[in-house]
View 1 (cartoon, helix red, strand yellow):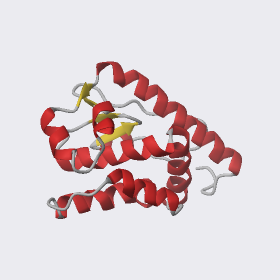
View 2: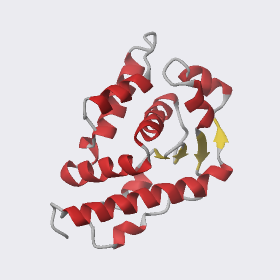
View 3: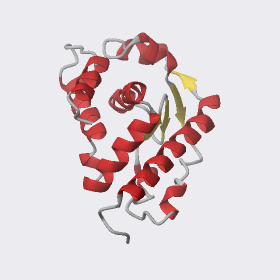
Length: 177
């Protein structure tokens, strides 16, 4: 295994590879992806902007899995590639790829990532994810922590809508990502 504390060069390399992977997967899945259903849009309308809900596309994988990124073989063996097959869903900018049915709680979590991508851009999202993942693991990535926190709020207080756009903007302003 490589040094658990990558050099700035390694981190830059990984961030660039992650961003490239995100763009490639988005481009691969977007043409065959479907818009949110009317029911999904209605359920999520109290939390996300109409523009975001209108732009997001969904793919449900049946007989395939998201391909493992090439950066697993560039000497940065700090990430377990099986993690991609274990995820319920993964978001590539504005395309959500599900390995399981996208129930409201899963969809909400992934839509938070769509909003994070929208505000941060792919490269900043990739930089943030890579840096924190390598430092502390998946569950300590602020992007994941925030999506989980907002997801819990969505599930526990369904009659108290809030703006995910504003929540993400607040975390960016507070340098929490």
